[in-house]
Amino acid sequence: MTGGRVAGRILALALACVAAPAFGDSALPAAKYANEQLADPAQEAAAKDLMLTLRCIVCQGQSIADSDAELAADMRALVRTRIAAGESPESIRQWLIDRYGRWVTYEPPVDALTAPLWLAPLLLLGIGAWLARGRFKRKRRAQ
Amino acid sequence: MKRPWLVWLPLAGFVALFAIFAAGLIAPADRTIESKLVGQPVPAFDLPPGAPGRDGFSSTMLASGEPRLLNVFASWCVPCIAEAPVLMELKRRGVKIDAIAIRDRPEDVAAFLARNGDPYQRIGSDTASRVQLAMGSSGVPETFVIDGQGIIRHQHIGDIRPENVPEILAKLEEARR
Image (tube, rainbow over all chains, first blue to last red; front, side, top):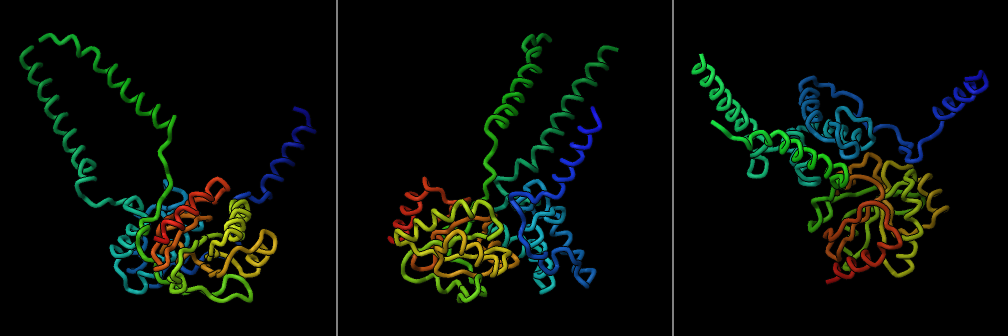
């Protein structure tokens, strides 16, 4: 690679860094409590626990505690404001489930639909134990 | 103990897994998040004006006796620019449209409307996405069909394109009943 091409690439990279993304974010600063902890440590701990188990609606693999999306920031602000107002974490979770479906929580409640999630591991462990038992028996017989 | 078919079990397992992954890659799951509030009243809100010189916008104004559209948009949202002419066309056809501007400044909204047209009767300003979250909306733009009693009857996710106009008009007509 010639020096000129290297310089060209560096320039292109520098330009890419300053270019504004097409699907830009808003011009408003983050809401209060989006990135600011609550003064009461117990309340902040409760809010943090809840935020870790709520799914960001924009960047769908992340919790709202981890996401940099603006909507996630607004959801954190919502959680902290409501916790500060004395609302229980489970009631906030239910409020979001009522709007976005159970999908929004990383802690699905146990019911007919989610039961396989909880039962399948037990079932698989049982099958594993049964298989292993058969193996051990056969070995003993061979000896 | 002879079970010759057991030899094929790993291959069968592989084929099954391969089919599952291939299906997921060829037709990825739909990641659209629909609001669960369709069929329920619009959550109560009372928003300050979204553009200079306009009135504020509260949920009580939606129960106006005739169906209308509630458009969730923002001046910083690119698909909203594409949607603007379609909303103008709906307005031309007599559709009443209200709006909630998400995380926006009134002066930016005014500039957006001056550039792309103003189809809105009312605009509320939702600076922390509170009403958006209360509506179960997951982004901009989104449009809700609200009936005359203030009940959400339909949600359109993403920008309304010219080909969506008949569907929107049909949903408005349905909401009239």
